Length: 497
Ligand SMILES: [Zn+2]
Image: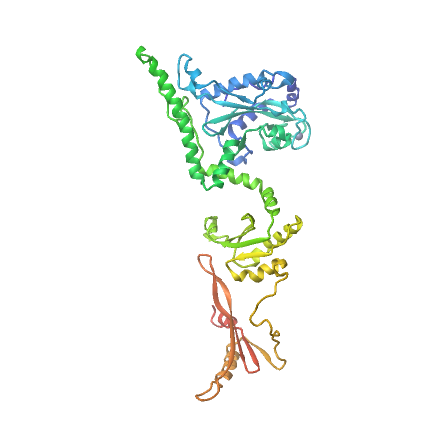
């Protein structure tokens, strides 16, 4: 636990604190040590976080003291200089100070986020009443940047009208970087917040934007994480070199200097360098995409689709998580438009067309909704899609005369004297077939003509593929009789399969 003395804001706003019991402040500080900097975690997942090194805590305390010197309209003095950033001097100027130590070169950057001091109407996300500043958050939040991390300094805002979820606590406080607080700010102010927050850390917005470009251009999370690590190491190495060069100047004096510790050394004087795993970068990207799903869908829904191409892919579904070893999705259906833009993208459990029908119906509706023309052409590598596409998009049939081989013939109608006989028992099936077998011609007699067809059940194999199963129905047409032999009932009932 940190020993913190920043409970007093040093301004008139502390009046509201009177409503709280004495434990409150220390409870909030425990939360700061324990909880995530982003969304609050579920109680069961709370873990004590690793203690921050003293050089960071000392720098953080200096920032807090500076921020408690409130200037105009009780804003942090920093803001009167037109910045949210508390930046350290350049490494060169740190080198001059005596005694030169590695920690003097670490020079953490801080971002001071107290939006309530700039926007006094900031209201409680829960009840809409005006919030007041309560205390500084006792632990700086780490945000990963291009070549180094920076640290968030924030405040807790207090609502006098809401009660905390924990029964012992009398009132609710909100962190200034809580996404609900950010959402309640005017966009011009909220846009200044420099990070995307995950559960435990954050990522700077420029780095995040760069990650999106990298992912969109084929770089994978692992390579991205490695590349960012290289950038961080490069900055560390430069500092190391500057330190050694400074030390070398005095070496003739026989002075002793401290060792410049390793990049990821976690001792109290260690550099404590940290670059998250590829999974962390991937998660923060995925969360962003999920948060903006509605916008992406709307953007896709506004695109045109006059000349389309439809394609089924089965590669991506191999990488989608399996449930009990079974693949959940079998294929991905993608429709692209005349500009090569994705117009529809849907995962489906089977290759059956009904799986995609809804996606295509929605596409037709959105084209109509945004006043676009309906599709005129569809490219596909499976002609089996033809009738399904035509039923989803009636515009495809407009002005088309189908060229079919027997198009001029009238549809066939079963003559009224033809009997349809359904058989589903071994004996009746055998009787039906024996009447035909009896007519099998011996040599030199006219040929026997019968029509037949089969229907199958669908079976799902062990690897999740849909295959043709047992024969279920046999249709045999002979003379004026159509036999429908339901052999599946025989197979299941009489052979117990
Ligand atoms: Zn409230």
